[in-house]
Length: 622
Image (cartoon, rainbow, N blue to C red; front, side, top):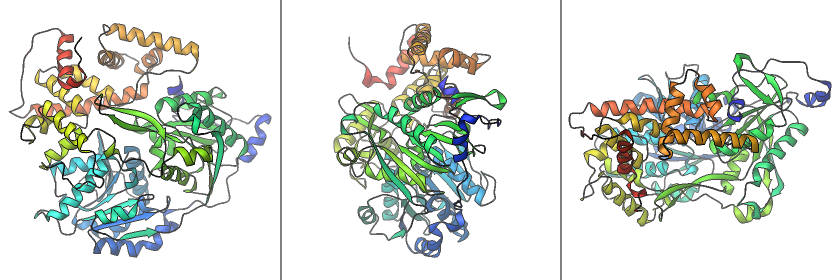
């Protein structure tokens, strides 16, 4: 099973290499270049200037090439300069994997346990304490902090890292922080500082947005990276999946022909990663691992998948150094293109595509689409090969693809996705005039009006546009408003057990394994159909609930998943999410004014009613 083979538990036991592979092993010598440490990063030369600039300015923009040390070192400099005396130093990341890994790295450098002086907070996971002085978190977590404490009284510095990602939440944070300083709230601490950091972002407009604030540039890059166009795909290939086979070909050639160093491969999502791993595994030899975990490896190559739906402990395995003589190959989504640093990476294979969330106003749905990356994103990926030594970036596309298909920057998420969740958050923050809110780039007014209409239909806001009690309850959940509304309907009927498993399953990536081989594909589809029939052929929601319940009640959940071609890793994540959502419901039900309803009917009918309450826009008349 591809999903299980990709999860490496412990380093393999060494065995004597065969003579046929001796030439390859000879190449796997440790390079002479000394790996950089935090002591010799380019940012060190700017330490005094940076600290003084933060002291002197409410807003500051820090830019510098990938690998300059912005993410790990600046929070430490500010802590050592005494900023934490006035509150926590908060650092945001667009993705939870980056927030966790950077927090671990900084905790190691500061010789403290994770969760004490240095901690992190991501969705469904809080590893921080009262003593935490440097707190890494996702931008969504900071936004939720502001819902409870709009003036950020517990923070002394807010660092918005990886600003070039321009996520929907980051753009809203830009506006909220600007508004916080404009209004001069009496509760806001005078020493609160905001730092915006990015390796690749349009600086003039961002500086003007924050009142022409100063920009500090950190010059230099640690190690040079050679860039190679492999010319395997061109502009005509941007609509098909030929890039997967091209990525596999380049990866194998790197392993067989290049000197020592680990490989980082960029693909679009879980299914492409699993397919790529399977293609690599087809060329593999089986080697046994301790603790009954098995993997496959091309001689000397350890293949590790990485995507957002993987459990945290599985994701952390990519940071473990491989055994001597073994080359690590991480096959990842775009989460590895930001602050995530994997030591030993010398070769990057850039697939040239990314999954992008786009809103279809006609259907009223957000849809994930595979699109070419931007040139700035390509440069960000290239920088991954030069973090700890000199490296090479292999771009599988050609120069024409670069010129014709790749924009300079990606369109910000705020201009291409549904704004319903964000508008609800702004309403909960008592920002009623959402059209005149200070956006860095103003979204289409139609998207704002569509979000307001949807929230009104959900009873989250009233006719005057003010948030309702139900809307405040909906904002407690880190889920889409549609799904949250369905959960609250089920909770009011005291049947949240019906909806929480479905909500948890919808919060992780697809649980269905779809193997590439025709024989295995038929078997997998048969198993999936069996599960659907057990759900009474009702719909996909009921099928997800059946999978959740049967796996959880099985005496051997991993074996059950293997038999039914279901991703065990995704189910583990869903179990954790379900527990967190249940705790939110428990707290809400303790409130005396929580709505209560009753309905006598079969289980399927109650489920239909709850789903229709949340997904009423998806209902059609037959």
